[in-house]
Length: 209
Ligand code: TYD
Image (cartoon, rainbow, N blue to C red):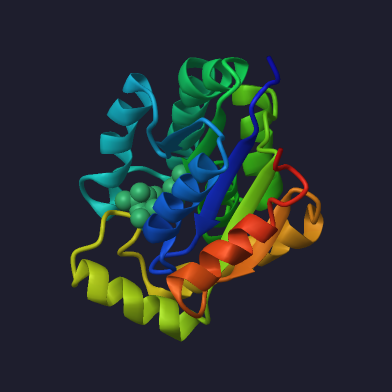
């Protein structure tokens, strides 16, 4: 049996990622692909326990390095317990966020640097990477407005960080896409949901059976 493909969906706050995740999963299933949908932080029992530590509580609960290590630890467990087994069964894995969130949030915006966070992934998960990473992008103003509508004033520990942090996240995603253009594709998230889903599918064209 052929090994499945691993696709991650990324983006800052308020870019319509949840809607697109569901639509993309449905579109792939419609092409006869068995899809396992998962998320980060989380996706395995251990990683879901770490998710609560990361997203709940005071903003200053973790120092930046501890936060990055917790994401890396959760990811190591998620890959070993959930992602690799599904790929080995021949399923496609579609993950709501993965490594590139750590590179953009903790690395670029959090000040640790993209390279040092990537080193954590080398240690934690042998640099295991998606076959393709799709990064939804909107103009900063539009995304922030959508996120406010969705969350009100009460985001989680990380989502509620200031606008400058989220602007640095966006810049981080753009830098990662420049560094790894084959794996990481920036997708325009403006327009109707159906238009955006079509863009995502197009960006997977060379992987589809
Ligand atoms: P979640 O509720 O899943 O939000 P979203 O709908 O935005 O995906 O919360 C995940 C939060 O954690 C989000 O603000 C992004 C952040 N995050 C990191 O900072 N680093 C990471 O490696 C991951 C996976 C997520």
